[in-house]
Image (cartoon, rainbow, N blue to C red; front, side, top):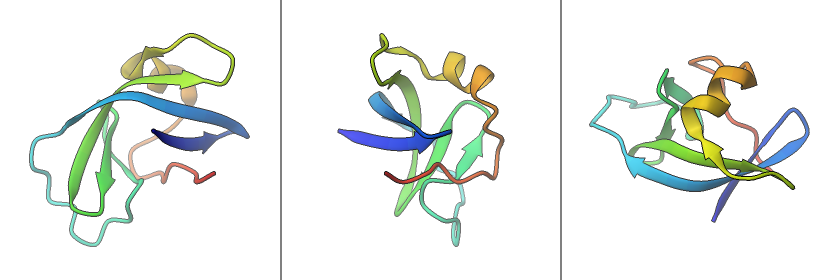
Length: 79
């Protein structure tokens, strides 16, 4: 599975879907490019639909994003 770091916490991506084609040429993979938790990838983009904080139940990606203080243009941290 995929993981990223946010605020020192390991976040697991438990579900994602291909996002509609978004021009992200030159955008660093891992960059949040949409308010619906769309993230740039090496070739295209994914919408993170469900994530899980360590030791917690999985939650809706949009719900996580609302409370996480991650803004469009920020790059999700690597573990």
